[in-house]
Image 1 (cartoon, rainbow, N blue to C red):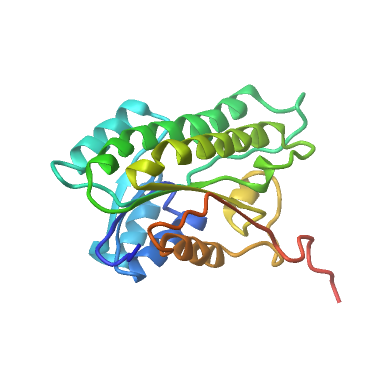
Image 2 (cartoon, rainbow, N blue to C red):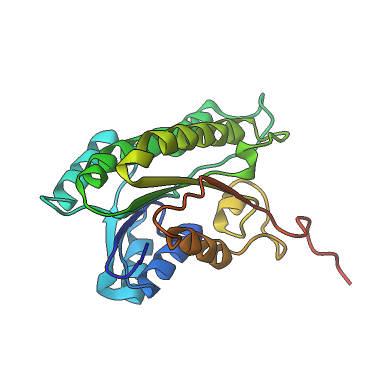
Length: 239
C-alpha cells in the first residue's frame, strides 16, 4: 500500500509505540486520527505533527463513545485505510495478588476495546475501494505464558486468536489483518507495570518502522503474524 494520502486510525497514540506510529505514518504522507485518553499528550503531538494529525480523546473501552466517534468521523465515502489497535493495559503480579479491577482493566482495554474499534470500523473498510489493513498489537506473551503474567498473557493470547480468525474472515474483502507480537519495548508501559525499562529492550521507533514496512507490502501479500524480539533481552551488563 502506498501510504501517501491514506487515512489511519491509531489507538493509544499519545505515547510509546502509538506516538512513534503516528509520527512514522505522518512522515509518509498519511493522515492519522490519533486516539487516547489524555488530552494533553494528544495536543502536544498535534503541535509536533500539524494538520495531518487529528487528535480524539476517547476511551476505547466505552463502546457507545467509540461507535459515535466512528460514525461522526467517517461520513459518506470517507473511510480509514488503516487501523492500528495499539492501546493496551498490562499489570504483572502473582494471581493471588492481582487486584480484580486490574484484571478487568486489561480485559476492557486489550479485548473489549479491540472489539469495539474494529467492529465499528470494518463496515466502513468494506465499503471502500482499494486495499485496507488492520494491525493488531499483540505480544510475545500471547504466544508463551510467563510467571506473574497470567492476566496480561490471557488477553494477548485472545488477541492472537482474534487476529487469526479476522484475517480469514476479511481477506476476500481486500482487508489484511496482521498480528504483531513484540517483546519488551522501552516505553512507560513497563514502568506502570512495575518493570524498569532498559536499553536492551526494543525501541518504539524501530517497531514502528517495521510496521510501516508491513503496511507498504504489495496488496496481494499478507503477513498474518510476525514476532519481534530483542536480540539480547536481558538488562545490559555493567562494565
